[in-house]
Length: 617
Ligand SMILES: OC[C@H]1O[C@@](CO)(OC[C@@]2(O[C@H]3O[C@H](CO)[C@@H](O)[C@H](O)[C@H]3O)O[C@H](CO)[C@@H](O)[C@@H]2O)[C@@H](O)[C@@H]1O
Image (cartoon, rainbow, N blue to C red):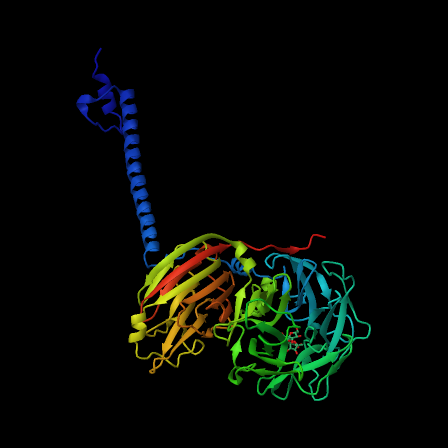
């Protein structure tokens, strides 16, 4: 048998290419070998490519990790739709109803174990209109149950709105509300309502008084400049008093009324207080504060060791002003401690968005708590698309700052701390002039941040003078560099730093060595989208000799609340980032001062969402 024949045959095959002639196998075996070799080659080449690809990926991951750890922020990749953004804007631990529009807080009270919050509410749309009294209750000031709307426009005297007012609890347990009715001719009339059942812990049903309105506009006062009656309180002489804000010409003022039966009110000739050029005083609040401790006082408190605060809301300007002074119950007159810090010209409760605030004396924990509304600054169209507008601040306790004697301290209620989890601590991080330090904390959209900054004292002393005319609101924000600032925290920043909101201190010094510390929030680059307030908010904050610079920030999606020096100066902002949202939101520290380094220490907690839902009747 010739063993060479098949070779000859194979060689005659049109597509045959000999590999190694002398080792050539018989034809079928050769075909198999050939297939195996080709497959092996393909496998080897594929393996090579897989390995190379894996190495590239690994390298990229290492690069990402390194850049995160270094001063370079990570690049943002995820794109968000309009719908993603609007969904993200809803807050997680700030009070807001499920939908539509809230405005001034009204008539808070503590009753049978529940904190009650009533509020101006439009039940039909996310814009001002159909003003009613919405109603929610809470056991802990964090989680809320929404209740049915308590009062809606029904009568000629409030058909254009059940406007703002207050609730009074009498020593015998009786409860009544005073509110302003917006009448069919838009004049403002004062009205009374009572709960149908005082022993209902939820005070669900309310009935308007048969003889409403109980007060008409006095002579000399504009028909639309007369509103927001206060809680009634009893003075040391046993007389019951109520106050209301108004204006005469351009002078803002507080009218005082006496009553013997809580229904008929007699106006005193002289106002409690007035300040020229401060215009209409809305939502006036008046309360005592202790000079000796942090325990709050109810309205009846009077005498030595007590100061009284007037708060008014400046119509049309979104600013709440307060002043500390002395109340004389014999004359029903109030005098400011410092005329330069009088009502409407001195100090604000908050230097950002916070308006129409109203406080509650909490008999359970002996504290005074205030809420205001924090309005939107984006477009009205966006409010309509979202289906809701306006949120409330986290309830804030108010005490007199006994260290300065000049300021109040506004501070988040302690209950909000219960939402903290996954705390992280950063100690003494060195921030050189001109530095940015990313903080790797994971998701950065629901945070409670407490930050302390130590300024290089040698640099502070050596600086002979620096921007002593500085002001947050007139500055160009965190990008404006001085010897001793700005430095602070950047929240809601995207990886490429195209969107960011810095909250910071800026120290200015005059030639005589006088130092002023400014606390600012820069909204100039918060959003690439429309924001009606591309501004820098802020003011000065007193810092005493033995104090470090401290700030606390509550970041909750589209709201940032900032408290400097224990709440001496507060700034609340609404922000509408388009990229710095969901997992793309980053947190950074920065020091943009030119001559001083700063050491930053921080505690940062993630914040769990609060529960806000309909009451399960
Ligand atoms: O909801 C009424 C309560 O709100 C307060 C303070 O926030 O007054 C606001 C005020 O203006 C609103 O109504 C205007 C339409 O009339 C509207 O243009 C404006 O944007 C709204 O803020 O509401 C009353 C009544 O309309 C008006 O005199 C005020 O300027 C508080 O004072 C009211 O009780």
